[in-house]
Image (cartoon, chains in turn yellow, brown):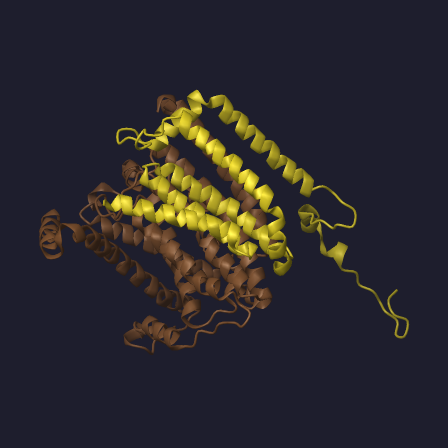
Length: 197
Length: 346
């Protein structure tokens, strides 16, 4: 057996185990960390087929940003772990249905497309260059539409969280900087026994 | 050099057999790379105390060994022999895994750092991207440490630290993009060789300063060391850690400082290239060392000079100053390249 094959099976097994950990672990924080492990071993698999650009982007975007945000949210949640474990069974039918649909889609894809192209990248063309070429020529419009959708989502998120609300005090930098001694400090002559009103 | 390598290869195959030798060879190369890195990491701690001492007009550590040169060893022995305390309510597995997860990414990145055109462990063609990707993993160690400690101080420290690292990673990544645009390659060897005419710091000076300030924030150093702001958070995310497990966090921090200094020297200061051609009799390795050493010194200098930032100021600087400026520079660099050479064809 080749070293590359051994590494493939190692990463593949790790991915599957980590994915099982995501759904199986009782603690949601552990689930997210297993998800991170699954991302990482998937990146390893990408490297093995010569798609190192995709691998690096996967690690950077999914592990470096998306999963960190998941972790933030999950850690901030005040969850009752014992109750959560009990409720897991209730969602089993939905989970199984979604899983079955995805498995079917995957099956259809394998059946209709030849997957035996060998490695994704060739040695002659740098795969960063190849991806750039494909994205900015053949798939230019879908690519631009996707980026527009992301931009809208981004602006939407900012607009939702950053709106002015009553009873919420907001920091105003310009106001802070414009404050002078005259605005903030007042000298009073206080008569004994009367206090400063 | 090539001669010696060939002899080693031949003897190695004789000694270990053709099946086992490649593995042994890889391990050997990794050890040869990491030994000097860990040596620098150990001794930058001493350098830090000596430099800050000198800046505050006091001798610094000078009792252990000649001029205190054995101080880092004494510190290491102390850390190893202290008791590692496991908090009762901590998530034990994650608590022990977290320090490793901060140190390991800092060491993994060295795989693609070139010390000369030939002296590089893995000359991958996405070197810059690899370093950015791996360095984004460092945040996991910290967030795991903060969460698994089951302590409020640690948790708040971890939240701050991760928010800070994620924010400044963005601006650090964006400062490297103009360099990639100029070079037309993601390989670090190409990035350095492209600086033969002039170093990248000349056309991209503002990017270099943003890069440096961002990496100071990213490595959680003063004046951006809010994650461990001791008057507010005791010691931040490693409040509950003791002995060597805390030592590993510190090692990870220093390993990151050394790494970003080398990266800065390679990407902006011409790496192993001499500043003027008649100085090229000095080996490239020394030039790289001098440049990276200077950047490491600036890290220590900054620590001795500036007071700590306030957290909201830090976030504002990252998102509202560095991000727009670096984005504008990416745009400007692209525009200039298009006008001067017409890069459309690639």
